[in-house]
Amino acid sequence: MDRFLKRPREDEQDAQETPNKSNKDLESTIVDYVLEHADYGERGRINTRGPKRKILQMGKQYYWKNKALPFESLPSCFEEFATKHGVKDFNSILCNVYMERQSRIGLHSDNTSLLKPNQGTVKSISLAIHARDRDRRLAVMMFQARDGSVETHDLLHNTCITFDAHQDGNSGRKHEVKKTEYPRLNLTYRHLK
Image (tube, rainbow, N blue to C red; front, side):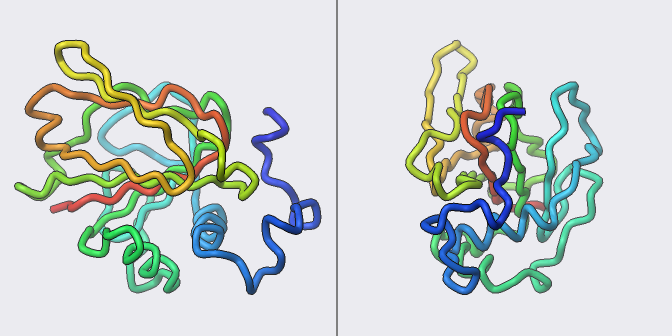
C-alpha cells in the first residue's frame, strides 16, 4: 500500500491538521466517526470482483447486508453536516471508505427498485480523509450516456455531485470512479422505500 494512503498515527499528524480533538472541524469529526465504525461490506443483491472497502450505512438500509445505524443514534455532527449540505430530508446514507489507489466503483446505474418513486435524487459528497489532501483532487467521477458521451467531475474535498437515479436508469446513463487518487470518504444520500 502506498505510504500516502496510510492514516497517520495521532502522534504523527501535522499540528495544522488537528490542533487538538476539541477543535476538530465538522468534516474531520465525520471522517473520524465513519473510520471508527465502518466495516468491510457484505453485498446483498449484487456481487463485485473489485477490492473490498469499508462501508457504513445509516438510516434506511441500502443493498449491503451490514446493519444500518439509526439516525437517532448518530452524533449531532451528522445533523449539522446534513443541514450544511441540504440533505436533511434524505432517509439513507451510505458511506464508502476509499483508502487505496485501486479502490473504485465500476460503471453502473443505481438500483432504482430500492428508491422511492419520484424521489430519485442522489447526492454524493466526497471528503478528504486526511486534512492535508483537502486541496487535492481525490478522484474523478464520470457519467457516460447511452450514446457514449461522457461528463466528468473532479471530486475535491466537500464536492457534492447531484443526479437523478430514476432519470439515469431510464436514459441508460451510468457512472463510475475508476481510481482513488487520495484517500476519501464518500457519503451518498438517497430516498429509500
